Length: 284
Ligand code: SF4
Image 1 (cartoon, rainbow, N blue to C red):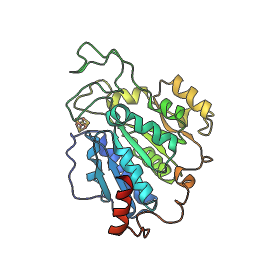
Image 2: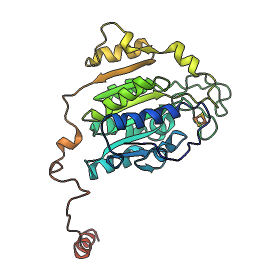
Image 3: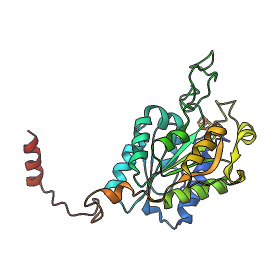
């Protein structure tokens, strides 16, 4: 099982996305997947290129739309493991509506956000994850908006799996992606993935100084939603590890009537031309 391909990523040397790619490949192998059993669907941004750097089914979608495509893939073929991925601009700005609804739907896919707190592909503008006061070409006087809190947002939207990691912590990140893939429902994983070229504030050193590992928080219980929210608020969202998991809620797939019988991708739908013409005629 080798999820590496021979495409050389064109990320800047030192970009955090390299580790996310490695963690995704390792996690897929560790859970026992074959390349043809996985689909990676990505949005637009530097991180969106990841779907082309993994030896599996992949689709580099459009800006903010990785999740609708990923959900369609999963609904058509439940036998595929589906990972959606993209950046913080992709998922928390233009794609935020999709993010919230995929979360509350609890559809069985894993969503990995490479959060670098800036728009890298377009050469360094303020993103929804940039802190107030953050200066870029688009906010030369400093951003007057506050950053979105993605983990708190996910908990509020009813997420059943919420995790966060740092791209240098390959072991933790790989384990969290494995847990996300194994989770029966929507798993939301935010990864601090530094942009070494345009974000000179949220650097590797900055994260090392500011992040708290949940495994170091005494008595932390990832099954306790209230504790998860309180801990996130106490640390201003700067924690890593499994923040929350609820294994009780059924996934969207389990609730869709008739879905369990046959994946759409392999079902005989008997869609001949006459059937198609009849369907079209009904809408005329
Ligand atoms: Fe990575 Fe930033 Fe370079 Fe994009 S611009 S590849 S996010 S370091």
